[in-house]
Length: 248
Ligand SMILES: Nc1ncnc2c1ncn2[C@@H]1O[C@H](COP(=O)(O)OP(=O)(O)OP(=O)(O)O)[C@@H](O)[C@H]1O
Ligand SMILES: [Mg+2]
Image (cartoon, rainbow, N blue to C red; front, side, top):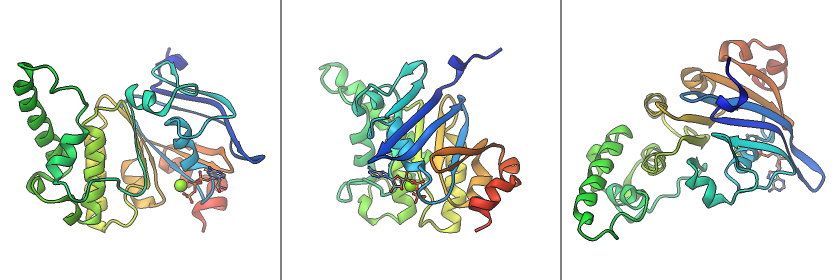
């Protein structure tokens, strides 16, 4: 029997009010290790706010968010990152003037050069890790290119790589394929499938083809609450979901 402590992420009774308006309203959901959970729902449903709450950007009014058993609602943003939660925002925040290599290197967890004699060895480890991540995000051939010259999709991948190099146990992505070409979307699906080993991924997305390709389970949000949850097959045939979202 699994208990609720076995989940990587357990969100329970979570609410937040903005000037009396409940953007997230008594929300509960659970995410397993190795799972890709996609959150869908109409504009203003509270999807981005849920990620803001998990990463500590927004303070919950009520409820709990347990990550590997640790309560996140009282923790500061940087402590949540340190605990293993990585979050990608909609617009890539990369350093356009630096190369792909340098962007990844900068994101490598800090503190590795202060160990004197160990520094050389550690640098080799950094290079190896940067190359490994570059391969995962389809940018092996672009390592020396300034990030500003990458395509929109490649910039999104680079930012995912900058999160991956910090080895988060939970990775959260807000509309990662918005503005991508069809080919880039397909590659992003492959990328997400590659990175789930030993971690969980939460993705917010409006592109239903993409959701269908990647989701293990889908949570449909509506007015800050779970409207429906389960496999894509199940939620897309749920009349409530068709009515408020997919039918449009
Ligand atoms: N910091 C804030 N202050 C006040 N209201 C907010 C704040 N953040 C979000 N809201 C409101 O909460 C509601 C949910 O917004 P949210 O951005 O979470 O929706 P969403 O599901 O991500 O929508 P979209 O699909 O358009 O990105 C909206 O009505 C929004 O205006
Ligand atoms: Mg949003």
